[in-house]
Length: 243
Image (cartoon, rainbow, N blue to C red):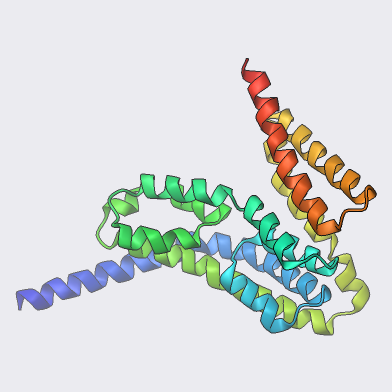
């Protein structure tokens, strides 16, 4: 009798935390769907099959990297170039994962390790605002529901975009290419407002990329070199500002 009552309480608490996680992830879902659809259309336009672009969302789950990957595929970049470029772009995920594990110390490692795979800029920001759930019973289910809500919405949006990429007029799908630049500008502007030197780093990366292309380097390696050297220039700029 007592065991039955305890099981019922655990079940109720589990359902409660899952519902809270879905509710917290709902705004992310609304933001992900249009971006994921745009990615799907652009990936289809770049020559990827519906299966390939959907699997990229399943396995990568990183919007900026997927946009860049689709664009690099479109310009004929090699696999190694794409891997290195996305690795550099996603290096911040190591920092986010460490911060996530540190903030949610009360959740066991068996939960935190797989949950860290669901971290994106958006899910990290939302989970950082809900640290108290980690102290509650079945708290891990809150973060699991949050991440899965975002994850499956991104996959569905990517698939839908791939389907639409086959039926919408070509001129309309080509015009959606501006979304790639708009996305990166949208990510850049808030940082530039806080620190102008971030804008200088972006300009440096852009100039290095353009110079490499002018010197005959492939577009893929030019992106990789521009990203790495542009990022390294930030070490000098910010160190100089502190001295």
